[in-house]
Image (cartoon, rainbow, N blue to C red):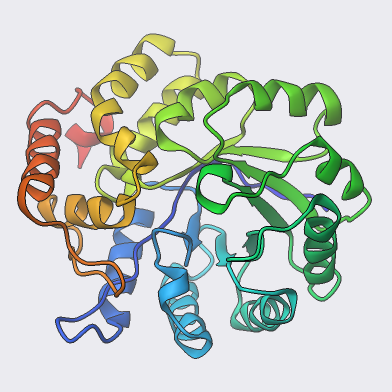
Length: 304
């Protein structure tokens, strides 16, 4: 199954009102702004989109609103993050009906699968949808590893086409390339090893902090792709203090707070998460304000 996924795919936020009800109009505004700023794809309802704090019907409403506002300008891939295969299939089929262009499929939540169980879960979902699928590997968060054994068992599943690699060990990009060639499209999935991932064969970057600084994120990847490695490194080094936030336990709160500081969205989050408080909140605000005050010189920013 051929896909054209590459570049910068922000894991977009789900906006909520002060009473914590869904704000679909503001979610659409946030996503539209990102597309206008040049991102090449959108991840709806990933970790940053607070997938597991929403019920099935809410997820479908959010996804449908995002598909509507994107209107085919870039691919919309939705997270499939469920407790079991049955629920994952249900949401995958609803996402396909809602107009999603692809799925970002996670291991089952809570239960830690053995490799053969993980393979069965991925196959069980893939067999029930025609959409292309990106597998999401994030061992620190989900205690499950999508390793060589798992990917070997899935080689013949035609619509499993990509892997979002969020393990901090960047050697995995090279190992996967050596083992599978171009069978799987690789995406860097951890912000603070994104450039390393691109150098080692990733075709794109699923990003959290792009929500706050989309133009810099787009230019970082564009500079890498045109061979301007000095500019890519300049942006990456400027960005790095914020990119580290993506690897922290409170990444959702930090990213939404960064959005708010930059005038792009609200810091409100859904329980059990709570907005950052005290020293941590002040720390993140100071980091974002410093980044905003020291932004690298970009032609794209000057033209806006």
